[in-house]
Length: 203
Image 1: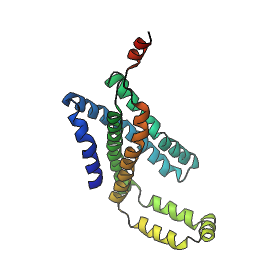
Image 2: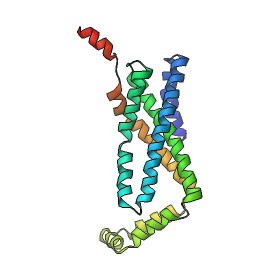
Image 3: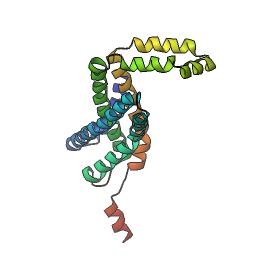
Image 4: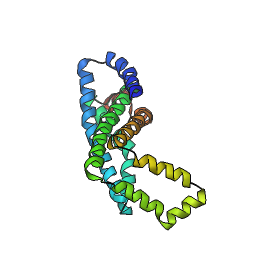
């Protein structure tokens, strides 16, 4: 987390120096709202994943929701660009906005995961994992690839994880995803001139 905080400082301190206080406040306000929406998408995906352990259709729905993440983030960035920035936004500001969205959403999802494993799970996930591994099909796959030792080590690792461990692991993954996916999203959504300016120039 210290590494990610350092990255955030390196990105946002120069950004803040090139923005007015009102612009910086606006960016964070829009990003917080969109972070909540993205968190709801992720929480829905997480719920479908857990329920999908017993229902394959919900497992498929979880995959769809997770794969929709970059498209959803891009649509929210476009909304900020068109309605908050009057159709003009730089790559740097787009990238920062995307990272902010993932950061806020990641915190909310981490809280949801912590609450789930603390108060709801009661060993359900671990039981489903063991059920899959101990099934005849699972045993055949493990023997085929000679993964018995690795599986045993992973089971011990998962069994020893606390709710906070699940939360921090997912938060780390989501923050990394924001830094990585933010690059193509920002590159696609940046715009140096508004549509109205482009139309006027053509006329």
